[in-house]
Image (cartoon, rainbow, N blue to C red):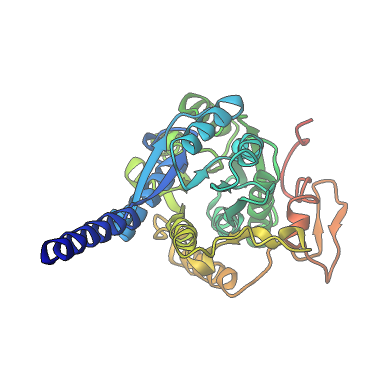
Length: 364
């Protein structure tokens, strides 16, 4: 009888160890990257955030990333592979992953999907973004004060709402500081292509731009500015090492806050898309006040410009809405009336205009 009881006790102990091991299985977290961390910009910032996730959770998580995922059918294939291999939560880190991820999410109701920079959601797909335009408003203030030619170069990616938010916020800040300054914009139709970005920068320099900004992902533009003895702004991560004399500051994306919060919610069983009657209820969209967007040190600028940049940044962190009227487009039409402001919904639907100070016609 003693042997039997001992056997039962050993069996229960083994069961407890087995159950404990099962409970200790790490949460599997997947990431889709548009490019490689070697872009030193957008994807690099996501990779730094993934590393912070691992440092924060330790052996409670197991992360996987797939780089160079094209926007389109390949994104659906990679997302499906991650879901099929037991990943509990999957982050897609580019706007063009939105529709492919949405489609796959409906086939895997137990998996949590997170789309970065998009606006479409499902029962198990949420969206998150950073208010990048806040940093570009501060860039516009600095650019308007720094330019001597009153010609600012701007390399834009694709004509989507996020790009117009940033470009128009930049123009609003620039005109506040310098009503005579103008923006020459080149649409690169790419997120990451150092050759295209460098060529666009050379064109802007040839047209007289002495300060340049970008919504593309590599340091190529800043490197051209460095060689030409001009100034510019870094994108997504701190690019100072590539252009120590040219960089005025970088708008740095810190995705780790979002990733850690969402992963913790999955662990706690509290994850939700947050959907409600308001279309934007399920969208996490934070900026400088929450350290999702961080401005690197203000450098290579006079003291009065630095003071103006600090004042503009403090105003944003205090809740200032950049898109408060009156705002005119570049043809003189009032697009936001005095006393009105664009809210989150309209920033994704009624932002398709060139603000005053932007030269040329919008892409067709």
